[in-house]
Length: 498
Image 1 (cartoon, helix red, strand yellow):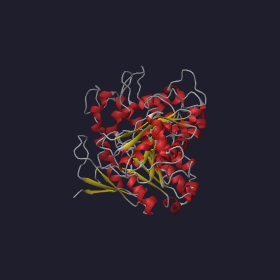
Image 2: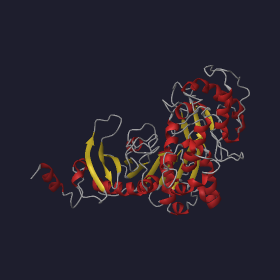
Image 3: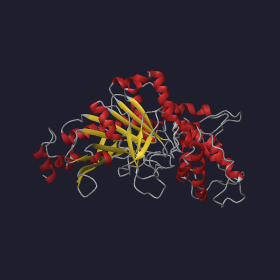
Image 4: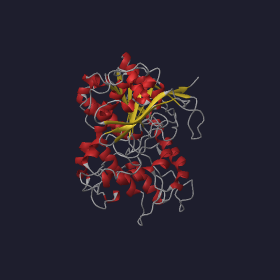
C-alpha cells in the first residue's frame, strides 16, 4: 500500500472530511467529485509573501473549462468568490493585478476563490477562432457560470466539510458581462455580484462600434491614420475635451461627469500638414477623431451606437492606436468578433471592415440573444435577495459607459426606482478608463467587494463609495484626492485627502 493510500485511509476522506485543511488539499486528486470535475493537481502554497497560505487546485470542468481555485489553508471566512474572464477568455489568469477579473484580493480577505478560462484555450486578446461550434459559444456566453459554481462548491465542501455561507461573483469587461448574466439567468446562485465596465451589448460593441472604429481610421489605401505615433497628440486632445466638457456637471475640477452631453469642437486645434507635429491635427486626423466621438451612423445619418467619450483620450494609445504590424488591443478584439462570434454561422473570409452598417445590423440579432446581457427583468434576482453593484469608467473608450446607463434605466423602467435601488445600483467613475489599464486622472481605486459585503451581509446599501488614487504614477493623476462616488444619476465629488 502506498503512502498516499495509507494517508487516505487514515483521514477517512472517502467517507468524511478531515479537519486538517492542508491534508485535505494534498489528497484532493484522489477524492471522488462531480462527474464533470477532474482535478489535475492540488497542493498547499506557502511561499507567496503577498498572499496567505492557500490550497492551489488546478483542473478541468467538462467539457473543456480549465480552472484554478485558491482556498485559504487557515482563516477561511466561510465565503466563496467566483471571477469572470476578460476579452475572449481562453487563459487562466489568477494573478491579474487590481480587481479586474482577479481573485487574489478576495483570497486575502479569506475567500475560497476560483477563476476559469471560459471554456476554451486561446489568447484572450484577439483570438476568437475557438468559437467554431455552438456548445463552446454557449459556455462562453454564460453556461460557464453555473458549471464553475457547482464544481467550486463541491471542492469547497471536500476541503472544509461544508458549503459557503455567502457566494459572490465579480468581473470586468467580458467578466462584467458574465456578472450581469449571472443576475439575469442564474438569479439564485450568488448573494452579491460586481459588474465592472460590462460589455452588456457585446453584439453592438463587437459588431457595430468595432467595425466603425476600424473603418474610420483607414485612409483610401487602407493604411492606418491614427497610428502609435499619434499618442503624442493625446494630451492635446484631452485638454481640449476638458476645456469644453468639464463645466457641464457644474464643477470645474478636471473630471468630465457628463461626457455623453458634450459635443467636442475641434476647430480650436490648429491644422497642419504633417502628422508628426504634436501641437496640431491634419485634416485626416480631425476627420477620424470626429468619427470616433460621434460614433457609427448609417448612410442616412442615423445614429446606430454610442460614440467614444470625450475625456477618454489618454487611453486611446492602449485600445485604438496601432498599425498593421503592431495593431492595438482594440483592433485585435474587433477583428476577432465578427468573423467568429458575430453570426450563427461563421462566414468564410469575412473581415470586420466588411460589415455594412446599412444592411448587416439585423444579422447580429441571433448571436446577440445569446451573448448580450441586456435583459432588464431582474425580478427573480431581487426576490432571491441578491444585490448587484455595477460600475463603469466614464472615460472607457472600448466598452462605452452609456450602455450601463441605458441598462440601469431599463431596469428602473421595468421594476421601478425604489425596487431597483433596493438591490441594484450603478456607480460611474469619472476619468476612469477600461478596467484599470492605466491610472485615471481622478481617484479610481475602490474596494467594491467590501462595499458589497456590507450591503449583502449587513443590509447597508451603498449611498457612496470612496475612491482613492495612487501616489505619483507618472500619468498625470491627481494624487492626494479622495473621491466620493454616488449612485447614478447622482454625481461624484472630490476633496483633498487631508
